[in-house]
Amino acid sequence: MTEIQNYNLFFKFLETYSPMGFKEINPLDPLVLDLEKLMNKNKQFLYVADLIQMKVLFTSKRSIDMIVVEPKDVSPYIFMGITHPKDIQRLNIGRTKLIKLGQDIFIAKEGMSIISTNFRMLNAQGKHSQFLIQGYLFYTTIPYETVFFLKLHTNIDLSKRSKTWLSLLRWR
Image (cartoon, rainbow, N blue to C red; front, side, top):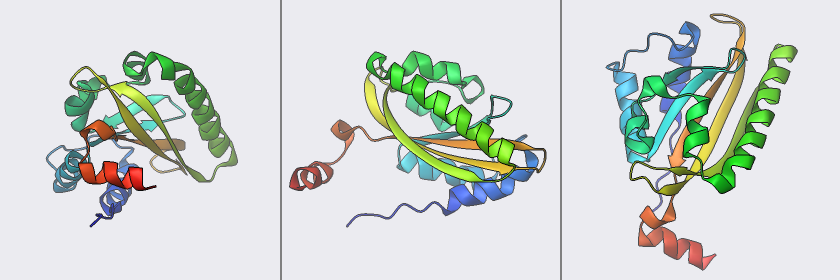
């Protein structure tokens, strides 16, 4: 039976930490530990950025396990080095669209948007895997006026998935 993805922990994380500008997040907070556990199970990591200041504010510890980058070192630059060469152009186009979308939301002083795409990126084993990228952008005035961006990376490399997944894909 297929397990349904529950995003409640992600929403609770946003509700708890966005009023603080995603600063001084305690990695031992039970909410953060539960989120890390869920992301471990789902082969995921996330980061939160201020799109107006173009700055990563928080990265989950799972970045170490998935792309071998310490949370404090995650930046947009890192993804240029780990994205498959054939996907770099799409990455650059996506960044341009993301920045424009964030600026449009900021200028409107309201709104949110959900985006998704996929890229091949180097994994912890030094091989390229397919990653699903899901993003949530939202305008806020608390604790200051900006557009925050939560970016969730999920390793969806089918070579690592069960035969059940492969059989489901063949069935289609």
